[in-house]
Image (tube, rainbow, N blue to C red; front, side):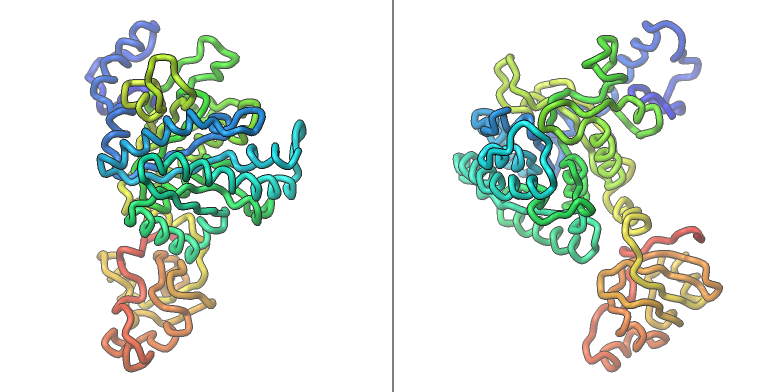
Length: 416
């Protein structure tokens, strides 16, 4: 895989030497940098932002919220909204705030203690955001999510619709993990991955992870003074993963490992991602987003695809299929030519599923041909299978879509 700071092999001029002396490598990196997208440009051009805030930035060691820092961040968010950018905030800090008020100091918390701390801290955290955003006459809305909310299709669609409605009404959603009800098995455990799932869910084109470090390094800069900053990442391979260190001390539950996991989710969803330092600066620039736009160092991860193809990749691999549709040879040929799946081509239905669930499409030989989101529940498909679309209303008593799976909700897959 090409080094993330350098162009792909086909982009390099013939005869360019990228190995050897450090000076040769640095000069090539500098030559490419001017033609590469920058964090400042990517942030300014984004249509919809998700900004994730770590506990260490928002809450001090005594469990108090950094009000001045929060005000500076909110000034940034208001500026983004003024230039017609949608903004979603994913905020850590509820447990860190709540544990102080419950007297849970100086030790690791059990799950039930974290849930109790979150229940107390969420109220204080939401109130802090409400006060800060009110200075700009911006309405805040709280959304609490669990891992299941982002993985189960119907919950995913409901949450996606809620985000769309809130953004359409001009509110700023503030998201956190619903620690008060989540079990150990259904927790994200860190808000980096939650933020990436929110970005995927809301079709955001920029995810900003504000942290206590200004990006990805070739090694842990806390222990290796020779560690190099990596400004641009196109792909996350073994070499990039090897650069991740351990989680920083304090309240943070993530570290660079979870940030790279978040980057992988975002990139596959067609979303840019930035890792940037969020701590207060000494150069007069108050807000962390303003600092990025002023040229502060950060690491930019470039997405693999446009959102539509990324959504299809999600359908193909990230959703547990709820049933199976067997189709005839004519339907398989139609799917391969880019058409939707119609009732007439269905010859069998397996499993029980609802409208919106992901199902597998197989040919008569039992070989998987594709996957898609069904427009009808399994019981209704059993009734209309083999019939023409014009007969749906007569058979079911209502008229739904002409297609059982629309081509926009369908992906062709290899035999498994």
